[in-house]
Amino acid sequence: MRKGKRSIRRTILVELLRHLKSEYDFELTPDAVRELLYANTGIDALLSFRSDSRLDDLHGALLRLQSGKFGICIACRQAIAWKLMKDDVTKRVCPSCEAHFNHRWVETDVRLALSVQKSSIPQER
Image (tube, rainbow, N blue to C red):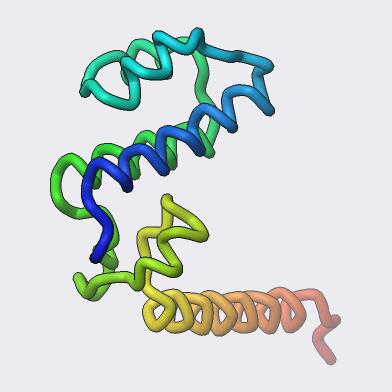
């Protein structure tokens, strides 16, 4: 991944702050924003009073960045292209694995639908 850790962290935090503004009408003071962007403190306190799946995903992205797992596919452990990560900083699966999982989910859905359909058709006596 070409971008530096600080730059990626900034990208994630900007997205997190946008989400807080749009969903909760919550804005930080300029000093608090600077503190978040340049220090490793305050994230947990900021998120402790709000929770939704997007905030959880963004917080998870920050934790993966901190642990060195940001941009690494959770399935195959290969790097995910920065172009894709830039579009969605919370992405955890590469396109190849995502296609594989989607295919498997479709197969499972089809099997389930067939079994429901078979059980709802009256049996001949």
